[in-house]
Amino acid sequence: MEQEKQSLETFLTWAAQLGISDSTNTQQPQHSLSSCLGSSLCVSHFPHSGGRGLGAVRDLRKGEVVLRVPKSALMTRESVMEDKKLCDAVNKHSYLSSAQILVVCLLYEMGKGKTSRWHPYLVHLPHTYDVLAMFGEFEKRALQVDEALWVTEKAILKSKSEWKEAHTLMEDLMFRPQLLTFKAWVWAAATISSRTLHIPWDEAGCLCPVGDLFNYDAPGEELSGIEDVEHLTSDSSIHDTVLSNGDKNILLDAEQHDSHSQRLTDGGFEEDVNAYCFYARLHYKKGDQVLLCYGTYTNLELLEHYGFLLPENPNDKIFIPLEPAIYSSTSWSKESLYIHHNGKPSFALLAALRLWATPQNKRRSVGHLAYSGSPLSADNEILIMKWLSKTCNAVLKNLPTSIDEDTMLLSAMDNSQDLFTLMETTKLMTSKHEIYSFLEAHNNMKDVNSFANILLSRKAKRSMDRWKLAIQWRVRYKKVLVDCISYCNEMLESCMK
Image 1 (cartoon, rainbow, N blue to C red):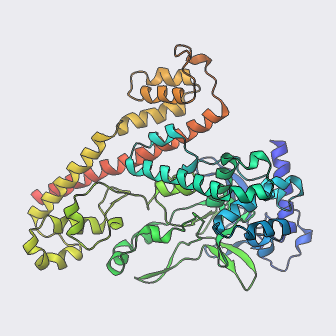
Image 2: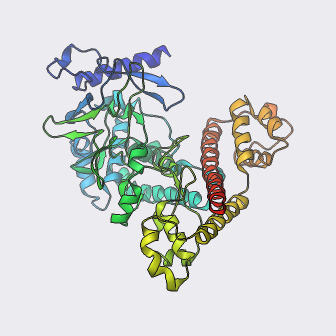
Image 3: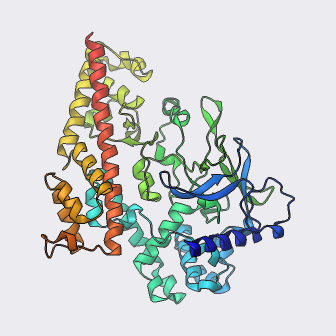
């Protein structure tokens, strides 16, 4: 712990020497500072909300600058490629994307060790991540839901394809063997995916020392509440707002100009001060964790790009199987036909179902009511609520485990100190089969009667962490379905009064 503390102090001193500062006094000479923090922020540990993050050392007002990171301190393709050897090699591989090149740049600097100008920053990067591209076969299957399995498989294949494409460049740069591996590539790619910030001059983004210590805060209900207006004016989906490389697109707790637009200002690169500036998105009391919102993501998207999920995510959504006739009955995009995190069908899904349940020759006459969000009739409402409830029930029954079994398994994992205790706790549950599958995946089934002697490797422990994330995700998925059934039952009671 003492060594870690000393390493952190060295890093913050190095950052101060680069001009990184949380001081509100921009005239204060940086060379007199032993740390870049202390005026507004400090590094703290928040065990129940993201782990290590930045806390307020004083009361902070919403909108005030809490951190500045000068352009010269940002790690970008441009800054790393000042190295002529790297620049010459990269220029021979123009077919690579900007994100692939930034991954190579990161690995190149890692290979330099202590001679890298970024070394004090690089040693503080996480040693591993839990993004979907790092999920093994067992963890992938633990997600259970076809959509999640497909997204995970796509993430893994994409990462492998990009690694193979960049392999020749890395060989040209004479990377050490361990830096040429897929394991090294997926680590660096996850670093870029989960930690880069948006910059206007490079779509790959930048790594921002100290600035990437902020933990995530989801956009609030005030943002998701404009869903209906947005869908009335546009067919765009949430995926249009997420950067394709998973970069942190710094957004803000919104200041609404009118019902059709939001100004998002959590932070960003500001040309006039030539620095990345971060702002308090809320009023914070001394000791509070200071958070950033870097986009509107579902829990599956958070897992894909960042390797975590939120217990309560106001932007989460799930999709259920819909009949082809439902899609053809409306002009809504498929991406808008979903169920909200609280179990309520989206505005577009309700409208589509109401039109689908209407005879085709009558849809034109009631279309204006459906598109305004109005029920068409009591019988129509009863029909769609029964259909929606039945469909959600069918999805739940087709999944290998129930929400109660998953919840008990999570509780057992939290309260068990070893695999023997976990097996004893779950031996009467369906989940015991999943535990056996975990042990088989990690070659720990030689003596199934000696669980007390099972010692998990570091790799197996990382797998267990991802397994737990998969269970947490599927629990939230199933909870949305359960809540939707409850919503339908409430609506049916109301219609039958």
